[in-house]
Image (cartoon, rainbow, N blue to C red; front, side, top):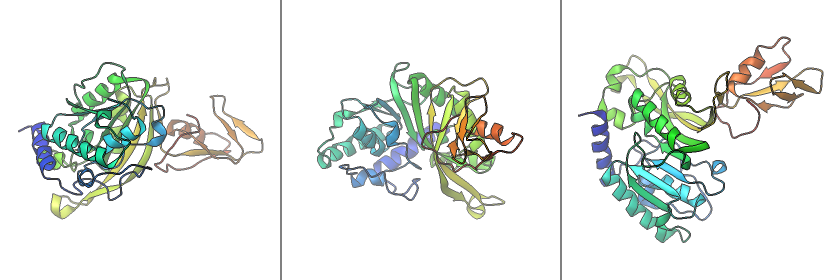
Amino acid sequence: MSYLEATAKFYTEVAQSPQVGLCCVQSSPLQLPGLKIPCKMQEMNYGCGTTVHPAELANQPTVLYVGVGGGLEALQFAYFSRRPSAVIAVDPVAAMREAAACNLQIAAKENPWFNPSFVEIRSGDAFSLPQLDASVDVVAQNCLFNIFEPEDLTRALKEAFRVLKPGGRLQMSDPIATRPIPAHLQQDERLRAMCLSGALTYDQYIQRIIDAGFGQVEIRARRPYRILDCHSYNLEDNLLLESLDSVSFKVSIPEDGACVFTGKTAIYTGIERFFDDSAGHILQRGVPAAVCDKTAAKLASLIPKDVVVTNSTWHYSGGGCC
């Protein structure tokens, strides 16, 4: 049985018999005024973070959601795009599609603003999305892409890039590993399906996104997710997994490389009122300005040392320059 077949079997099981806390972080779903999440949806919250970032969802975007799960995030996206087929939810597992459709019917009874027609559920997978080129504003997936083998991950990222409009956003939440996961765990198909053994390291994960063509990546959150302890998983040392929420933009990659924002800032400390590096970055004295990691490294190397560069906060919500 391939890992994809094992994954389909596993998610058929959890669609029919929900496993509370299967892989979600221990936090409540995003709370929004007038939105009530049915209990069944909360039980089927099989994500590791969130992909629903309200600041990214102005003007009722068309959202392609890959891996519908119990429908929780599809419902949350529909909150911002209240029109038929505004959210297109794709899943290869028939039992999961059926469970999500039932949950959305329950949601319609509990939320007067919601109509199930807002979410169109389709059969399909991440490697061949049932959508035209450059046709959606947002592609989202939560705790799905980490299941894939590295080359399949690249295929999925390129498919997301294909269907996004220019300037569109890929909104993802996936586990990452703080060090490479040993082969004996990577090859365990059930652990991979459970989002415990397929994770890449942060650097590997971000590079795959850039290699797919995304010119800007912004980290929304990075936090502890699970730990693979040495006793249960035959490891020499405990291995920490983290949950990474990111938004990647379909924009051109600059000549000097993609812009990755991780919450760093640059602060000018010299005697002038402003600092201009002649590369498009103007810093006001004493005022932190958000910068991408690439620019942060350049500014940190300046002599004299009139610019202080702060560490990554692993949270970025806009502003600054790259």
